[in-house]
Image (cartoon, rainbow, N blue to C red):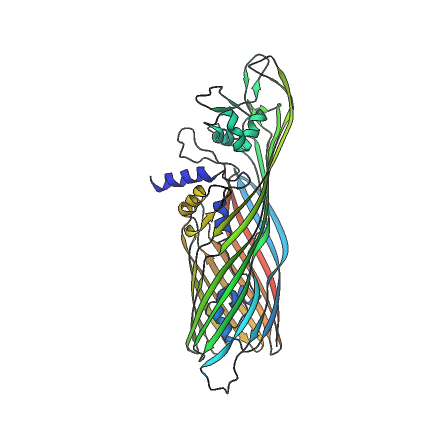
Length: 521
């Protein structure tokens, strides 16, 4: 089985694993692809911090950095996020935007450094309790266009036919939307119990001719995402002879994620004229996820010379325990059309049909391990340049559940995702009590085979002021990445391995502004 066929096969298995979302395998990526948003100083440096220390964000990224602290600190980082998405769907453009306020970081460091005159190679250390925002899920997406697809595959109804194929009508109830479509007179069976097959048609006209569903509808989807992913760290770091710094942390993770997707088809054409029988087909799906997790981070920093530092941190897999509530509904609106049953003389007036379902499930996700190395060069008291590299293999994520079969999702994870390298670079220059910072980061594409580049690029900058009693830092981070969205999955009639799903291509931009207030005590 070649790689392309396995990819298509896996997608077909998982595309409707969960009725309200694409598949649980997407959760494994979404909750694994995290970043330390953290303090304004860290953000302005592009996140390049593993070899630095001296910032409360070390409790999250590399607890060995806590060994550099010489005083106790309390910090608070409010943040505002502006997201924007520009979509292209069959050559038609649309955009959407959203802003939200959140807390990027807060915490306290208790320092236990020994006095300079004490003759001991162990110089003490620090203990910290911090909260760090790892992910911000807030984003709105809109795409809108007339489906110009050929091969007779131009409606979500075609995907329901594909899903229902081979399933007897008395078992369609297990398939969700295809069952509703059958009851809404959108699809019909061939009437052969030995070879269950389905077709797309509205019914029969009075003269017994088949009246098919119109083509080339206007398709609109709005997607609203909310929530965030946070980690509480209980961390300790020590200092040995001002050369070796070491630390460890216990992370308690939380996830709160909500999604609402509204999809509609309307303005159908029949024989190149507006279809006067059907008004609209629309679906609404929601996903509400809550969960907790646990992880650990271990780190080392070496300072063989005053001008250079080497850092390394290892973050264990995070084990999440998640609960999910989903809903899905289907509305079919007819223009008061009389359906003539071909098997009887009954005439049924078709107007509006509506069905809604709710489901609950629990499952576990184990994210992949992450190894990070870093290097920092110090230019005396003038400033420094810092760089980090992450090594992470997204194909190592795993899903477990007693509520549903996870075989297909774990196959999708191992097939669709790959190893990636993320890198970050940042610099800080000091002028008296003021700081000027800049950074850049790149997160590699986690997909093994994709029609678009799913990497994320960030440009950052900021300023700061520090004295012995307090400090204030301000940062701005601009992120840009591409994504795609298919409202449904269908395959070519001529080649069942050819995915011909309609696809919206989306350019995402995000601006995050944060301010950190800190007090030394």
